[in-house]
Length: 156
Image (tube, rainbow, N blue to C red; front, side, top):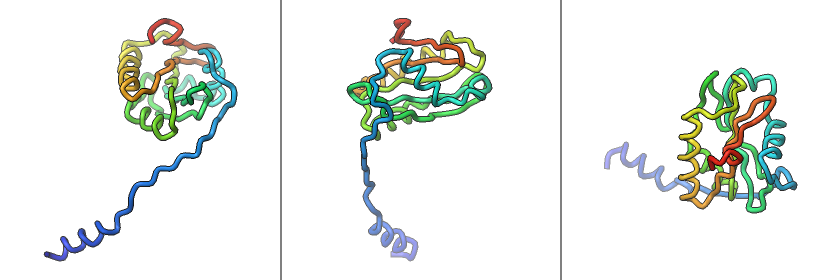
């Protein structure tokens, strides 16, 4: 065995297992039961000074009784788009033992109607989440002054 192989072998024996720990915390003991409550809650966690500057995505995670476990800052982008990585959304859901989530993003223009890309990512997210027995509860497009709910409009 050459010295490089011996080095790799000796360090392989020192690898440790991945440890996963979970300490349940609930951000809000109030159940979020509709899109208005979700909008009002997430808006408190949004920087109102930048809501019209760049697109941002946050995800609200819930337990089985719709108590809010947390809000994850997923991505920040440019004026007209940002990345929504389905794997990251679902990996966080699994890590916090969430049963459901609400995807939330802003439109810096203030226009609340969904784009084709918004509709497409919502359909893909819903399909992938269902495969993991996690529910996409809603997808909100927000502005400083209002919101659009995919659930309320029958798109989920």
